Image 1 (cartoon, rainbow, N blue to C red):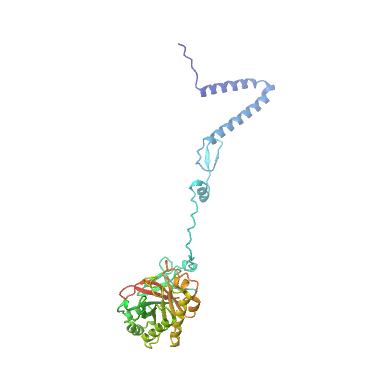
Image 2: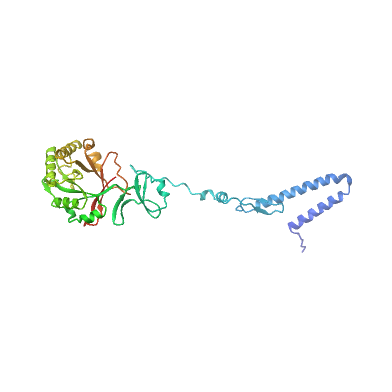
Length: 363
């Protein structure tokens, strides 16, 4: 058996190159060929150097970043500014997509907190542009119904403190410690004097009216009254106004006598539930003018939706408007007409009142 030996390919390439250069060296002894041969050798050297550089570039890992290739064939990475490097090394798929804008609810409002407040470093009470705020430890303003020390305060969604805080009460609130109520910062109370049944139409009084009026005034709480109406015509409205005046008994009031207009608890079965907006406006007008004729101020209490769609607002706008609207996130009512008092909750907690209390503010 004849075994032929074949050198490795790298070895064969080296032997071939050596023979080639030996032949060139022998030819260099010929003076006529020396210059051309030198040119050829220089050209081949440049070609080989180019091949080496190209192979080095192809072999460089893709994540080495920016740099330069040295003549020795080594790759030296250059340093970029930190922010630029981080940006260039972030793969396109890793760049987070911009967050989709949250849909805005209909009638939503933009909350604007004065920048001067967020820049404040102190905590506690501060005044800015005529408004009063209470800043928490992180510098943000308090919002909503808050107890600071022993007193209650109400702040709107921007942190603006309401000018006055009040309650409205009836015999359902039972015995009230009015001195304790006043000590907590309650400025006013609107007290029920009676009402009319939404099915029977019979008038009724409130057994706590005189007690509440006398004790609230003695404690320094400002007072007003309201009558729950289910009148179906102006004549019944006048009857309700006269019943209210009789219940007050000549006691001076700081706030108006209000007609409370709302749907019954058995809608649409209530006797006044199906009246038109103009009919309701005539009833409110008859009540309020009767009250005014006796020397007291008059007003209308109703919910935001009621005022928008169930009564002619233009007719009642000449009186004090007491608006009921239980908003979320302490936002002011989205009501584009004037209102004077805002009932913002029916679940407030006030020391001196046994259960939940209706809460009101005036800005």
